[in-house]
Every structure is written in C-alpha cells, then in structure tokens.
Amino acid sequence: MRAIWLSGGLIALALGFIGLALPIVPTVPFLLVAAFCFARSSKRLHDWLLEHQHFGPPIRAWNENGAVPRHIKGIASASILAGVAISAFLGLPTWVLITQFAIFLGVSLFLWTRPDA
Image (cartoon, rainbow, N blue to C red):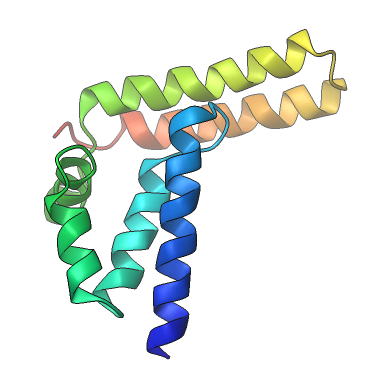
C-alpha cells in the first residue's frame, strides 16, 4: 500500500511542477494531494514538501486554517482565465469555452471564499 501512496504522491508532485509552466494546470491542489500521499508513504518527502521554501507555506496554510494566500488566489484565477483566453484565441468550440469558463467561475468562487493566509 505504501508504494501506491508514494506513486500517487510522485505523480501529483510532477503534475504540480507541470502546473508551474502551464496556465491550465493548477499547482497547489496537486501539491496538497502530494503532501497527503507522502504523509502516508514517505516522511522524508512529506517533510521536504512542507519545509520547501516556495511550496511549503501554502500547504501549511491550508492544513492549519483551510486558508489560501491572497497572491495565490490571484495567480490561480489569472492562470485559469489565461487558459480560457488562449482557448478562445485558438478558436476552440463554444461548448469548450463555456465549460472552461464555468470551471474558472467555480474554482475562483471556491478560492476567494477561503480565508486569506
């Protein structure tokens, strides 16, 4: 079972890193999943993630208060909106744009109703 949790954590961590470069892929939710999986599989990786200079603070804020730092809320909202804009620029079908925009609204509503860290 430990290997499954470790694999899940490594996959989530990789997706989080991909999210740093791609505006459509979120970073922090994948890092939260990675921390969850590492807590069940690798104390060393869990501690590394929580103590990481850039990734640790938002994970700790979420674990302690369900809070999201204001600047991360802005970055996440802007990134998702950029993804919708890129899709519109590429001329994707209307149903795709509507779906993306609905997701943008849902995620943004969730994020902006969380306490600030």
